[in-house]
Length: 284
Length: 320
Image (cartoon, rainbow over all chains, first blue to last red):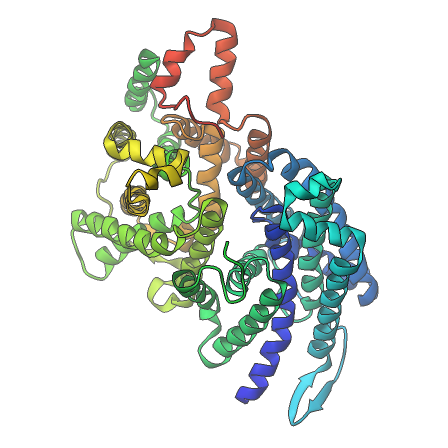
């Protein structure tokens, strides 16, 4: 396993980290809330894909889309019932999303149990790129992940709702004055954020173990990535995502997988001490 | 109000004379442990206004420190307990100094991240920490259950009293002023960072101490002392009991501990019930159960309860 191979694998998985982190960056940037349940949506996305693909035999592509649909619906309900009423108080949002995260984790535990699960690969075979051997599963997943990011980016830039969302992120009051229904934007934003997490989860299902408490690591990583990349910068989040992917895999292969969780925090601390606005961010 | 509280405390002192039920005594000990954790957490959460989601870490590290002190170094318990306090303070510094640079809800998730790191570290370093099984065979401080019962009861009362004295002191005033308006406090010349860290260290120290004492009582230390579900339990107890009040966390702790332990047939639904409780309280009665009771009694007895609110340590300027 040469260094180059590990780096390339890191970039591939980093692309998906970027997708998850973008979801958190969205809710954080637009709604100005910290969504502690972001990881839980990721986890539920994994389980739904697992059940659809492995238990019901639905083909992977359809499982992916259905997962997104279900998570979108759950996200809408969650925003409407839990976030919207307490939006004014940042602390209450943290607490209520924390409670939601625990709730979802318990639901998963009761429904699917504590056994580590995984799914069968979506793509088979390997490809040789300049002497580096990559399996199609990773490459295919990466491509779809990038596609998701591209589609999301186009959504933000080209559609009316997307532009309204960016407006709300810039200045909520001005957006309201312009007649934008901010409540509706928040509703959709939260659901899309959850979907981004779930889409990455769904794509990564064959590659990682699925279990109820798996959500905290993606949450932690996303948070670190968003802080590292800089608040309000989608570009920054994506670069930071790739960086994290590479660093995680380098850690896993050359040190040990046990330390993989320690690295993000160390980086986070260093960033906070040196440049709290992140690599690409605006001043908070 | 004071009479009510005094009689409740007196009642708690009498319990061992009223019953021989060992299980009940054990549950009450557990309730006191959780109450101490809840009250210490509330110093930073309710009164300073910062959600520290790493509180279990201070407790767990305290427990492990004593575990090592006993097993590895054969130190007497008093030194073990002191060491736990020191370890907890160090942890508070390590976590607090970077995290307090973030404000409000960002601070919360930063502490959450820190807690996950420590938790992962116990797994990664399983050769030292004993992994899933932790450290076992620690000799208890006191042999008899009843002696332990009084120990923990006294510790709980001492903790509440300590927090009460802190709140009445200049430190308490500063802590609350930081919560109300940090910018203004800084403009008045206060080094808010120093006081935030101080509050966290006190909170952590208490958690570390009780982690240590509990370690001697249980004779075993396991990684779940650092887990997120313990932090969540503490948060639930404070929210349900009454955020930002002195006695609320104690009530919440007792309530939820009893629910968790006695409804053992639905033990597996424990966390779901807690999370739904939190959601319910936040949506409908953000100041907690205690507030619900007080408001209920107010509607029956009228505004006499104003004095009671002051006794309970509630600030009338606080809003959730």
